[in-house]
Length: 237
Image (tube, rainbow, N blue to C red; front, side, top):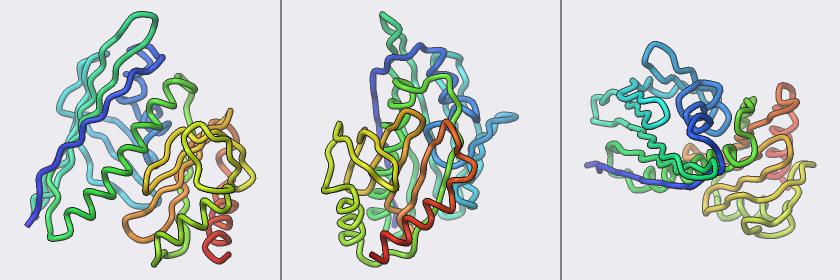
């Protein structure tokens, strides 16, 4: 058993089509809002996230300033994921960007996987919009750290929100791990903060760990151990 899926997302950003194109079609651009490290070369998009390699995704459309699309091959069980980005310039240097993610999820647990994928993609797309609105043209250093295994997600999020002073809403100013920032997005499985030099994201990993998936525009090379320790302390507290 399995299910075809499609998830469309759209935003109007204060950025030019050129800046949007750079963000969605180049490795450094994708690094600055998506997950882990990405390379775009010889018509293939390759992404590594926390030591795991995602299936390579072949570029299927590359129309500069208009459309960029890529898709993984179908696995033996039919699984694949395809991404399509569409760009439409507007007046006063604003741009509409659309991201449609589609594919097939196999197995009887496809609903749980789709839920986790959807919540994660919503966060990544919100990060793309935030990046284009506040950091366009800059390149982030991705930081990915996994916390201890989680058996009770309601308790895990309760602990995280307690560390922030309560469940926040978009626009609230909070402090996490010594970093103070503005909440730019939150859903049931993710939380994102923006500071003047980075975006700090916490994700409910489908494999069972809280993930710190940060994007740092300054001083990102040596912060991994600190965030790993913070996640461990949060889980043990």
